[in-house]
Amino acid sequence: MGALHPAQAALQEVVRARRVGAWELTEPLGRGLQGTTWRAILKQQDQSFTRVAVDGGKLHRVVIKLMLPPAPDQVPIPAARFDEWLDREAKTFLVEARVLSQLDNPYIPGVIEFAKQRTKAGWDVPWFATELISGRSLAEHVGTVGPMDQNQVLDLAHDLLAALAAIHHVGLVHLDLKPDNVMLEPGKARLIDFGLVSKANQVGRMGGTPGFFSPEQLDEIIEERDFHPAADVFKLGLTLAIAAGTRLHDIWGTDPYGDDDTVRRAMQAGPRLLALKPPVRELVMSMLAFDGTRRPTATAALAHVRDLLPAGSSKASSARRLDTASQAGPPPAARSVRVASALPSGTPASRISGHANVGAKVVVVDRLGLDWTGTVVGSDSRRPGNVLVRHDSTRGNDDVRSYPLAQVVRGTPIS
Image (cartoon, one colour):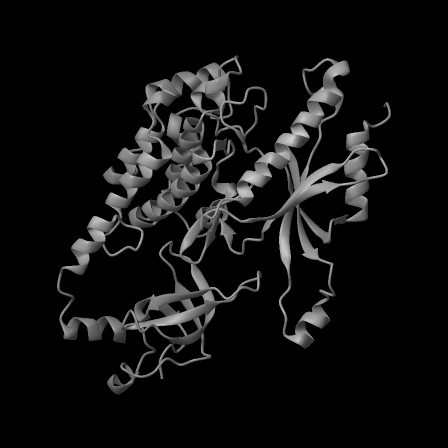
């Protein structure tokens, strides 16, 4: 075996040192084609668990993405041009991190910092730090809890389409959208792992996950349409179908990891989505169109989903929200029954209109059907019958959300 290229040696040096900038790499999270990810903690200040606990401070944690440079024999480029190509890749890696850092979208983790780590090996390793997301992946949720219902899938579609619309607007494509790269948090889903993110229509950086390639990515030619935003929309369609309970193997009626030509023919025949209810099935069908030009843009699909969401949802279109606001609420008796049903058995009726039980530990269920622990911090003055709950979070942030009492499944929210 020959000597390592300086880029590979540099990456090994950084990993051994477990340090980039002011961050200490504490735990490897994953490895993809373009990067390797690590959980990290800020070491510029004393961030020991003892110091944080004694001072009542917050632990500064992030996810660090290190560029993973390939070996010269792993890419179809003449050896004489490899270093030049690698320098362009490193520049692109940081340019895309800079673009992501300028996005302010609730469904995309924020990019906190990006730079190059100097090494003795003679190559500077590009890296960037993103917000650490607490929660579980969509793949984990479906595998343990089961399929989402129609409204949960629409809620999920809203969040992921909003994320795609944001990155497509600035000329980027994700290229690796799948259930493993969707994290579920209280009240929302977030698109993570931007290791394959690329400028739209940039040729030569093919990547992704087998089973989630779009039809245009399964032919023998690498061309502009392989990197078009329509490829992201296709992968989202597959992801939503899986969230709704359809197995990846059943969508096409053939092995999605099999021969490319066989899979493409099955895709051309159309997906099998009979298990999905009509609104979700029609949405997913449009995203899985064989011809990428016939798929909706993320922005158009997002507008459609907002029209499909229940009128009471804060994510529904403004017209539907206004329609709900114009309608009279349920009679007081019906409201009392709904509130009473959320309280512990045997709760006196006089306690239903009591004050928020500030400091009480509770478990709430969000719109995606996930259970979250938190602490009651008060009543929601803008939404009578709701309590404000601060979620327990590994990020240490103050994530306070409003919940109807009916969504509190354990604990005593009022006293």
